[in-house]
Image 1: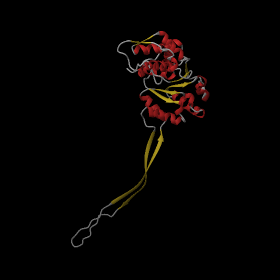
Image 2: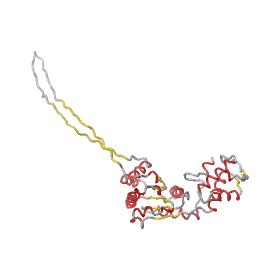
Image 3: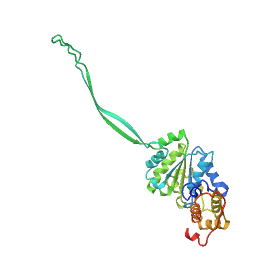
Length: 290
């Protein structure tokens, strides 16, 4: 196993995922997504693990649908674009074509006759000429098409970095999200702290209908658990004080802790899981070179 599979500073860190506060946040989100329909607002500081939390609950909790469709806020410039992106992630077309024909149909009838000329018969027959113009019209597919697919197999839609959605788009998108909620969709929307009320500000009707999960900066103890799990997986014996130093340098960010642990391994020439346990120590001023 490669160290990049263990310590991941982007994407879902399946091996080194840590449930904070004994899994309280995971349980809270799973309970919301167990509903028949839900919109869950996840708020917290940047890099506090919102997307990892959603990925973990969808992949690991049996009572939650196990298919996750993630759309990033900076890719949403209209509500139409949002639903088209969802359909694309589902592997479905975002447009439907309709073909129509316009034109005339001419029929020339010569009849069946016989002209006897020198004992030779001459016959004529009917002929038909068709002239058509083909017109192909394309129609964008949206929420209705997503609902049709959802009714066949449930999934969770996650809008990551929703605070990056332009303000003028938020109102129309909020209305679409409310309709999706009414029609049974399960959705999560991730915001940084100071924009956590953006959705309810865009549509006041959502204020009493949205469930919320609030995340804080990671504690020193929880960050240390990332290092401990990863080093154990790689069969590396790393002193507790080294892990404490790495966690302290991570300033509350799980992504930074993942990155520091990865770099610690590479600077010690470790790139793969070890067959035999190997002890690593923190060299002088090593943290300063990360």
